[in-house]
Length: 93
Image (cartoon, rainbow, N blue to C red):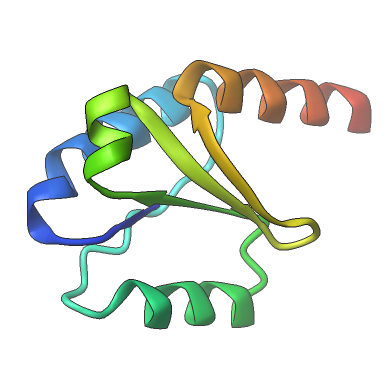
């Protein structure tokens, strides 16, 4: 989870908690770096999904999803993202 600035940290924490409750591994990048730098670093680490959180995402209780495989997937409600990940996991088993 990549919050853009400090004021997004609380929402990032609540997103992380919801993902953990659904059995999804998650890390929040709280470093004071530009979001572009955080995205590049996550790509180098081969993170499967990056959730970018800014003002719009906070207002709409959503996340901006970036996939390592498919690139920018755009905004998505948190529930839709959780359902997508749970379904992908179910298909792998």
